Image 1 (cartoon, helix red, strand yellow):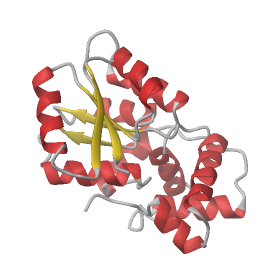
Image 2 (image 1 turned 45 degrees about the horizontal axis):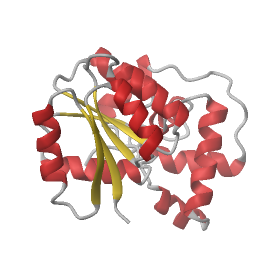
Image 3 (image 1 turned 135 degrees about the horizontal axis):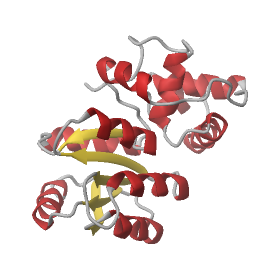
Image 4 (image 1 turned 90 degrees about the vertical axis):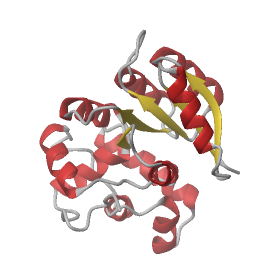
Length: 216
């Protein structure tokens, strides 16, 4: 079964362009389009996509507010922020809202497809520079609820950029069990996304900057 995608952008021509080249990848299936954040929230509730490509600046409800609601209500749906300008504040707000990653709209088609597949697989991908900047801005709890030994192992591997499948293989557990552990980790750390969990792992020294997951 392919990765189910929702495209969210207030410009029809952008949505059409994305749909056209994403359709060339047989592993990706565009299940819907939305022109604003409110529409995106409604369609996610209906369609339960694996990944949402989310524009940030839109009328009615912006992408940040929509991401926050989607991640709270549908934690199995990952959100990738798509933006025209790499503006620090927008990036920080998107990650804080729960986006697993962010990309510029001029990203090459192959790179976008790779990022979508990585997000669906639960891979956190942050450049060391982005991780350093985000660590200063993204708030993670100083005294979270204690993680179990297994949850700590999962968090370490997640922060190293491993996919759910890779984590399962390393720890000899099923992919569903990995997802259950990740959900518990996010709940205990009180963060909406794997990216923020990975930043927490960096902050407490569970992984070093060099070991953290990064964009290829």
